[in-house]
Image (cartoon, rainbow, N blue to C red):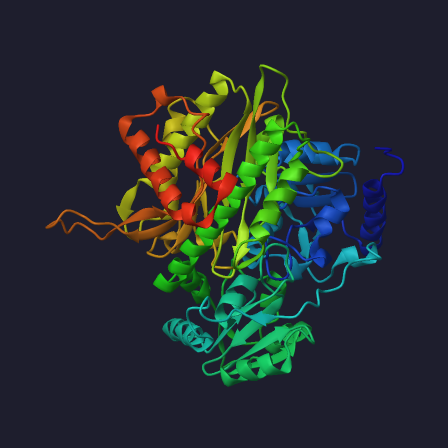
Length: 607
């Protein structure tokens, strides 16, 4: 990179001129939009545009004398490469420490400095922590402006794609019932109004879907509910007249997207407004009417949508089978192409796998960008191959490598997320050892039984224990909640080292990933991921200690046994794997034929 003409350096220079003109010492740019989404519409990808770092999560600070990007271990290798020559330093932070930049700011900004951040994209809970630290350091926080507008001439507009209904049978509950359930929760809180900004909550509540955000079938909107009706604040033209009439029949009116803040300001002193401090921005919360009482609690819809109904679970099982059939067809073709000497790259894998999913019933799109990482690239948990930088899947005679593929699909009846690792050439004993230890972690947690209401972070150590016993650790969480034809990452449950709270209690119907890993920088990465469903567990007759739950493994795809060191597995672990493969074969065999069926039968042979 020519550091004299780097577009990133030029943008940073232009921003510093704006900072000086505004009397601001530093600008904080979070990876966020007014809905605190994980995947951002182009308009709010300012952190990426300003820094050049393309990872999904990071925080950027640009000060008059330095610029720093804060990222956790999932992104360190990627960030070091993408920030090279930009003048932006990488600050490595622990996974699960999203506020590490706050301490840095408090230490590095001089007293009486002004820190600016767009309040419309700053989470309310994050704003509280930020203000507390800055007040102690004598730094003033400014949240009333978006300084990127001054230097981003071709900033993308708001997306304009239409919204559509998630219809029966896949939408297993009518919109009216979901609105009624949330209003019951509002009444328990003593709230007259409830403001919702998170797009997956709104999509679930309204039984609507869209395509405003990459990989998640959601749309940009805010929702303000009262005791009998509500208003959906959404872009003009996104809802057609027929759909608007159906929404009106359920008490939902439409208003301009940009008028949500004014509606909050219009609430009077008799209103009691329920907001979720983790799921609303500081800028929107600050607009609540003078004298309006604000109740802070988790969005009722976040809890409700995490608990899939029996009908939802049935549709998810069907989606998993369709997804598994696509995987069989892909892997059979992939292995045949390699054997024939075809040139296969990480990009080819993405194209071929996506094409196989597109052939399956109910498929709508990918649930996140496919991660296909060969050899050293697999050691980057959130690696993404590009046309400029990708690996060819090949090894020299007598050598070998591991290919990690993390992918998923959005189906009308569910959302999938699966990671598998495949041997290329002759893999080493060290690779097999890592692979087997990760598999042991996946199985150990998959077989767990636990009392209903167990806080999900308490389960994290079960997946890590086989790795910890060998002095191995991984830097990301073990499992995340998964939506129902919604976001591939959803709460409130998180199987991780997160500090638990009461909302993380495990309940029947929750779908969560299990994905321990081992990452050896410059060598290889291993991650084996299945999605699981919380279901009631049978307990011995007469035992009444508690209601127990266990996991039903939903994901249907062979786990490659060629990478296993059998001596590291106990008999009960081998039995679990063989029974899993028998289920995979039984469920998928009727859906595939020819080479895909032969591949399935070979890869599910018992060990």
